[in-house]
Length: 438
Image 1: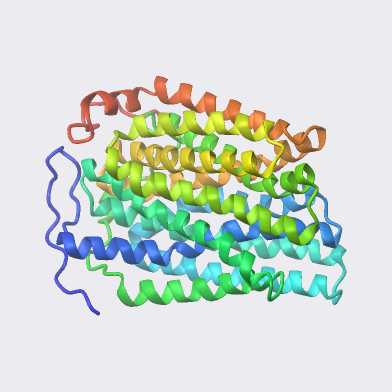
Image 2: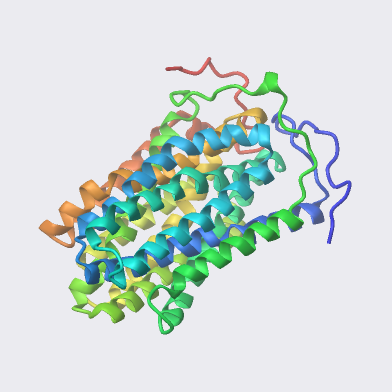
C-alpha cells in the first residue's frame, strides 16, 4: 500500500487562510485514519495506567499522594517540551516527529512496567523503586510529547478553517478510541497478570509506530526557515484559549487521578475488583468522549466556541453528580457525562486556537495546546489528593468550579466571540492588532 503524488502545490483557502497542502479527499481521509489508528496507544495506556496503578500502589504501600507524584515530573516535562516538539516538527517533518514520540512511548512504558514487576516480586525495595518509577515515567513526558502536537499540525496543514474543528476532533478520537478499548481489554488481561495490560501497551506502541512509518504519507517540504517564528505564550490571539485548555485539563486530571481511589472507598471494593470497576467507569467515560468527537462534532457541526461551551457545561454538571454518587450506577453515569463533555470541549478549544493562527504557526500552536493538556496533571496532584484526604467528594466540587470558570472565559474571549459571530470560513487575523509579547 503506497501513496504517490497525493499532495499538490500549496494553495490559498477561501477564508484567507495561509497556504494548506491540498490532498485528494480519498487520500486525506486514509491518511487521517492511519494517524488516528496509530495514535490509539496513547489513550489506551493512559486509561490502563490510571485504572490499574492505584490498586497496585496500595498493595505496595504507596499513598495517594505518592501515586500522584509519580506523574508530576512527567507532566512538567510534557508542559516544557511539547511546545518545543511542536516547533521542531516544522524542521523534522510531522511524520518523523510522531515516530519519535511513539518509540519513546514504548521504551518508557517498558521500563516503568519492569520496575513495577521488580517491586512486586521484592527484587528491589519500594524505597528504591519509587524514585525509579518517577524517572522512568518522566521519559514519557520528555519524548512521547512529540507525537500529539506533530499529529495535530499534520491535520492543520491539510485542512481549511471550516474543516478544522471536525478534523481536530477526528484525530482527538485516537486518544478516545484507545481509552475506550483500554479499560475493557485491561480488565480481561488482568486475569493473566495485573501487569499484563502494561506489557500490551508496549506492544501496541511498537505496532503503531510501524503502521505510521509504513503507510502515513508525507511528501511536502518543511516550512521555510523565514516563516518559522516563535509563537508567544502571551500572544493575545491565544492566551485566554490556552488558559481554558489548562482548566479543561485540570478537571480531567482530577477525575482520572482520583476515580479508582473513589470507587475503592465509596463502594468498599477489594484490590482486584477496584481495578475492574475503575476500568468500567473509565471505559464508559472514554466511549462518551468518542461519541462526542465522532458523532456530535460531525453531525451537528457546531462552531468551535459553541462546542467548547456546551461541553464545559455538561462536564461541570457531571462533576457535581459524581460528588453526590454513592453507588456504581450513578458513578458510571457521571463519568459517562464527564467523558461526553470532554469530547466536545477539548476539540472546540483546540480548534479555536488553530483557527486564529496562520499556517506557519500551526506546529507551534499544536505544541502549546498539548502543553495545556499536561498542565492540569502537573498541578492537580497537589490540590486534588490533599482535598481527597479531607473529603472524597471535594475534588469533584473543585472540578465543577474549574469548568464553570472556563465557561466564563470562553464567553469573554474576544477571539472566540469573533469566530462564533463570523463563522470559521470568514474568520481571519490579518486585521488584528499586533499580539502582546513577553
